[in-house]
Length: 89
Image (tube, rainbow, N blue to C red; front, side):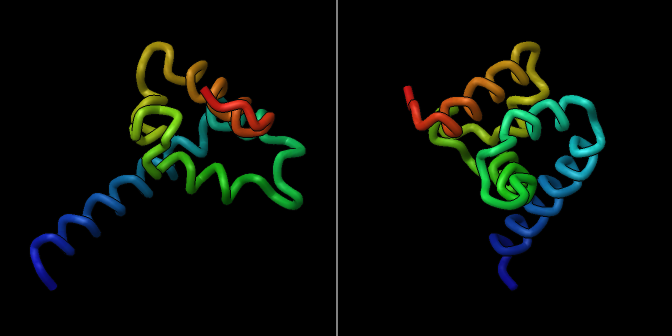
């Protein structure tokens, strides 16, 4: 394995650890409730993936990084509502 692969794996582990902690918060539940009716089945796997992947609507920022900012949760909820309703800005 190369140094680049090691760094990638370490970064993914860090994101997953942060996601695991965030998923236990009321803020996570609020974001999840925004997606009710969005997915045919369970929207939670989609939300988990979205939270740790660069988001186009956030200028490429990783949503879980945005969640920790003062207005981050409102911004994430707004982005999710745009996705749910198909309105992108």
